[in-house]
Amino acid sequence: MTGLRYVYAVCRPFDTPLQAQLTGVGGDPPRLLTHHGLVAVVSHVPEADFAEEPLRAHLEDLDWLTAVARAHQGVIDALTTVTTPLPLRLGTVFRDDSGLRMMMEEREESFLRTLDRLAGRVEWGVKVFLEPVPEARAEPERKPASGRDYLRQRSTRTKSHEELWQKAEAFATQLHETLSACAEDSRLHAPQNPTLSGASGRNVLNAAYLVPRSESEEFVERVDRTKDGIPGIRVELTGPWAAYSFAGEETTTSGEGA
Amino acid sequence: MTTPSRLPEPYGQGSGANLADILERVLDKGIVIAGDIRINLLDIELLTIKLRLVVASVDKAKEMGIDWWESDPALSSRARRDELARENAELRERLARLEELEPRRAQEEKP
Image 1 (cartoon, each protein chain N blue to C red):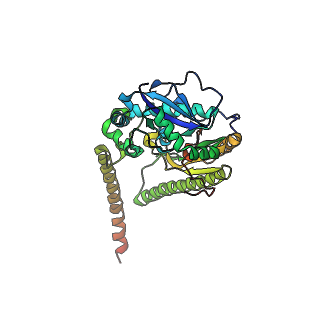
Image 2 (image 1 turned 180 degrees about the vertical axis):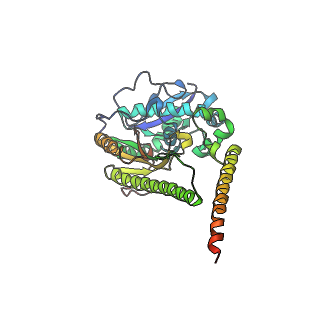
Image 3 (image 1 turned 90 degrees about the vertical axis):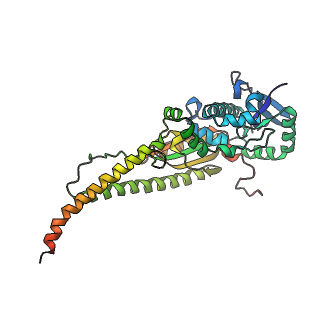
């Protein structure tokens, strides 16, 4: 019984087995630990990597972090196809099964409450980007014939940038309203930095929507319909994700106390 | 309640999933539970990761198509040079413009 316990998620017991070839963090296939009415999904991970000191050091390493993040998400993703998991934040590690059981027991009620709230729901991510304006637009930049001409060219450029920006903002606001109306809940996240995302353009909207599985197809179609709206504006859809953005406790708008 | 109904094909996930999308969720969302191993994820907020990229692994970042600092004057001397060059060009144009206006004004000012 060596190794630490890396916990991905907590869910209700489910019947469908996980894919056999699913590997988790550190290559260890996820195992199920049942306690009362809850199941924790865990991997056994080496202390050499996941004890406090090495873990802190590893998290500084983008390659390592990327691999663990993808493995974590891979397991959550697999769980999402068979049940409704409550995803835990990356790096939730216990010494042994009994520590984990203790935690499950302590938080049983709140886990069950959150599971009830999220059962059968998934999260869809929607982002709106304002595409970078190519410097040379329709008419290639000509050398200004005079100072006045130069100023005119310049102000035209600035104006078209501004207009596009406003258009994108208006579009994003409207899209968010439309999608919120057909989702159970929504969250606005900070716009993504193009650095990490590698996406082109400026991220105007970065939102998450909680949608029942049964209505997901409709939701996706709705997003798809907006995709060829305005030139220069790009809509990106990701999902279905586990309800990451909605798993935090008591953050629902349905009036539960904090 | 747990019967999974048909889900549309996943969008933008799998191996090609945007790293930012994944990190945003697994590091910043989800349930926070104090395990036995205490680490402070706040220490590795995305911003910090981003900054660290510049310091720690420029090659890796470039490989990922990340080169924003090259155009950020606060971070890149090349960008500062570019900025200067741009400003220089702009000033030259303004000067040319003023010179162009000057004789006309001189004429207009003549009684």
